[in-house]
Image 1 (spheres, helix red, strand yellow):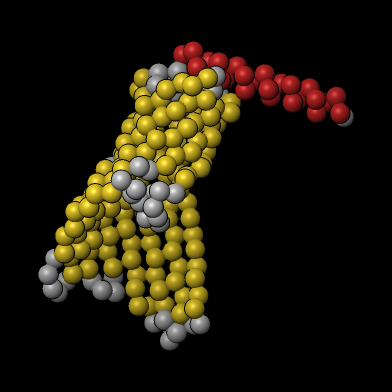
Image 2 (cartoon, rainbow, N blue to C red):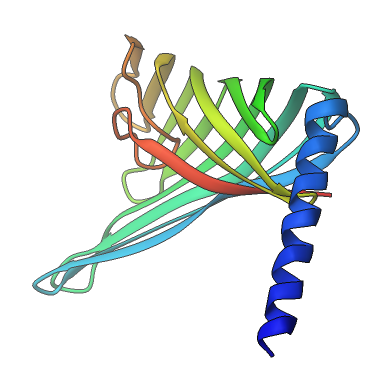
Length: 204
């Protein structure tokens, strides 16, 4: 049994090394990939409850040995019920996030990349009867490590964000905002500042 595990381990290491060498030498031109973000949270204070969820699948393709383009399409939703069981907010946001990446090989299957993304979001609060819209330009560097021919592990950190947003209530004045930040929101979901993101990307 030990010999079987040892042989399997050697085989996996060999396949990983071959995949890394192939990527480093020839790049990934023509290779498709999928990634994305999925989250759910539920918070309760007394009898009041807030549920939030996000589904944002991303699909891309390498158009050159070291350049890939992709787009994410998904939805962010949240709702709050008060202690009387009445829904006080019900928000839904449609997200489209095109992106482009340029890769530079460091060694073997280890890469550095720069990413530019333009998330566009259209939201609606059904209870308040209001609509929101935002457009952002996000720049993020990152590192990508090729595990084998079908999976990589990556990490990134947002460094720049320029964005425009508007809120239009059914009754009242429209509010618009333009912002610039060198320590921007980390994702279209949590809007936290400068957090490190780690994830996997599947190749096919």
